[in-house]
Length: 163
Image (cartoon, rainbow, N blue to C red):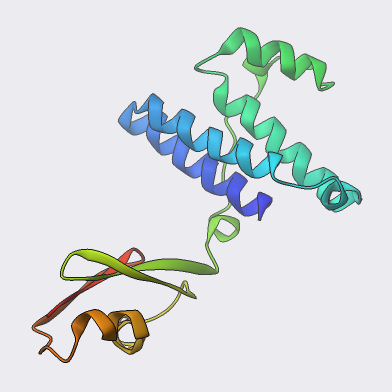
């Protein structure tokens, strides 16, 4: 989870900083990564694989924050035992395969109001998603045997049932 979140954060921050100049959303994405890192228990980080993933996440946080808070990041970078300065490091690249979600949480709306959520595989088809949404008990309750006029699907985000 931390490895996936690290690569998703690199992708988001790179896009926000390099092309859009959205520094607030870049910092927000980094804060989400920090929260994911802090949510790990001490038991999770005892073996070498977890230590490597944790080190990758910490180093990535410092590299991504460097353009916004250079002096603070540089000091922390040196404290974490790096010989080079952050200015000599390259911007981290992300692995698209590592950043890919396995499951998504899809919001289900009925007439524009959130009524349910579904956890589904990331590669689900629109037809299957529509069937699952219409079969959901909470959706059935709010549709209440009214004719369904339209089902709007926003890929990987939501399904809106108009009754």
